[in-house]
Length: 358
Image (cartoon, rainbow, N blue to C red; front, side, top):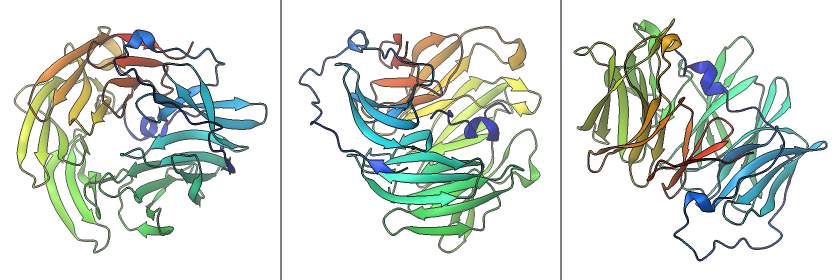
């Protein structure tokens, strides 16, 4: 599967954990709120530059390397001005904002098999730091309690350990789950596809309470799952229409509320899961649709970026793109960064796109 373990672990390797730097001056949010994508100023930078994540609706966090130091800068999309957010001598792998943008998780490499996760507040000040003997890590922030995050560490042989971190208390709890890719579905419950009996990529979706270890089945099978604070999504292969998958959305009581279909592409390992992204505040789910189902190696058509509203059930076509790329939606749901390094930005209302890094 194309979007499996290895793609999930490819949180673009760019370029941090020692010293936080508060901004030199207060960043102006600006009074003009009717900006268009034409007002956005692209960065003219070196090849090593990448967009880490959104800071707020007007700013992105830019990761760069200068001499022997790595720096995360806060970049104003409309003024083109930058201010320092964090500096370090360690290699920065990624930075990811919390669901409500109150904290930021900075992943740095201390050595080939040691990774550090640093939690920063909105001023770029270090709050907590955790280190792991690991070659790669995968993590998921708890949207129901931002002080909790679940982390899976991988060794070079892809053996793994799963931990629940409490940022507020500094607790690092080892979990006994035998599945590496887990997500939070409540304050204390994680969920994962239990792929012991995996057939055609599908597996049962299981919920587990990290405090009691009690397990419950959420779905008999699924190719992928995800959620925001209000809805749980399960993607399944559609048995009634060959080559199609069904996105089914449930409320937090596990009652089905919405559903829509997409053609699926396949590869040597089974069905390929399309990239996707959430606007968690307006409850819009974004993903890509190929024009038809086939083997991905032979597919040479465009992909349609669509937005599906969980509140209205309406599906909107956003844009036609040559290839599908990871999606990171802005806090206000107006734009999305596309690609592992965020080199392109798309207006989610008009479908207009622009190169953000030149």
